[in-house]
Image 1 (cartoon, helix red, strand yellow):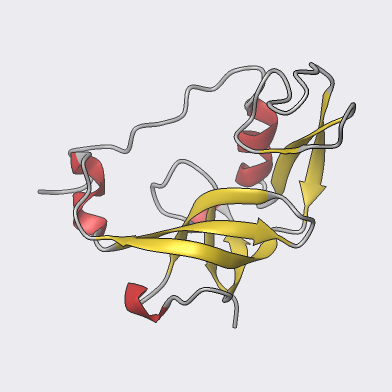
Image 2 (image 1 turned 120 degrees about the horizontal axis):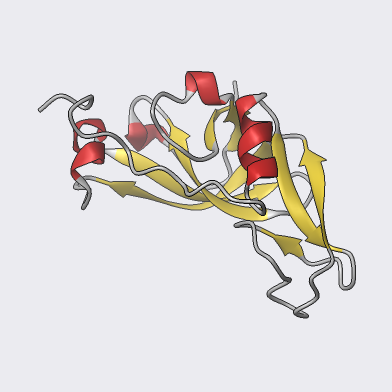
Length: 138
């Protein structure tokens, strides 16, 4: 099956996730932080999940971090991801302290280890994947 026949599901673009999606298109990582309690927020939200404040601001981050935990997915539920199995999905702790879950490009996927350094891959280089994607740092 061709991956072009089954496109990736795409995030629904809206007012509160557009800054993140636009930044990634430019090759940057932009995430939210609560102005009231300083909680670091990912995925984009309308209010802080910690204190419920609606005062969230966008911060441009380095796009670098380390793998805290990961899984290698050998069989995807959605058909559009099937040709790319196995795939690596990881919990990443960014240098600035934001935790996030993201895809990590690694060839072969089995070389990924906890503690490895990663960096953001610009959207144009991440293939069809619709959300921020990382690669191992040299």
